[in-house]
Length: 360
Image (cartoon, rainbow, N blue to C red; front, side, top):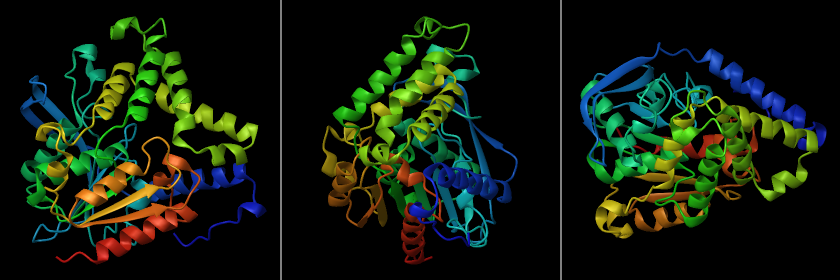
């Protein structure tokens, strides 16, 4: 983006964050996308046996699909993200260069403009899984867009869980994987954090067992604040001023408060249940060995929400995996850093170099 990383000694943390927000907004505004499109799957069968007669997946595309249909990249956002999560990274000359690639972004099942509990089913919505979140866009790509093989599948946080499942269950349909903050399984600490988030929402009197008349916004906001310390590091908290921390907490609260409560609770339930070994009788090695594609794993060195152990386990089990650690004290949030920051430049360099190694 043609900017230099600013020395933290010469600019306050608050000013630096404001600059990052401005850059994100400017990049998003300058990256034109098609209007949201919908792909409909009829009689979609969920892993738990539930069936929805109509399942809609909202998606955008940017760039031009090559005549050989071999330049498509699909980007999968994190748990609270949508199809615009990667907008600042998409466009001519950017990380996901639309002069070279046909870039697909989606709203995963259960959120955004895709079919969701917020559409009216509430607690009656199927208890979907990460594998359900994988099978729906896989059908979009293969049947809706007629693309037999993705050049790359990129996942961020929860999106990396989805992408890993894709590489395991449809190895022939993806030429490479780029996984940011991945893990093959939700560990005990992560599961407890999700349990506390759900319990916090349920403490709001408006919750009513999930059959509410009014969205329990205060419960959602408190859940967002509860999660915040886990998505940054202790070192980051130590160097942040009280004012900056209050601003961060408010932003986290607002992000959660914008969700429908049932949609968020079911989304995090899918996140919590993640385990690629489940369909393989608990054999993690058997699951990971099915990934045939070259795989880039990028984990934040200070991540205490997902941690680095999961990425290292994937590295040990996937035959063609490359592992890199993002040097940062931003914790889990480091994987969302933009070019122009130390973390964002590291990610940009690693991804570009990895994509350059792929053959057509």
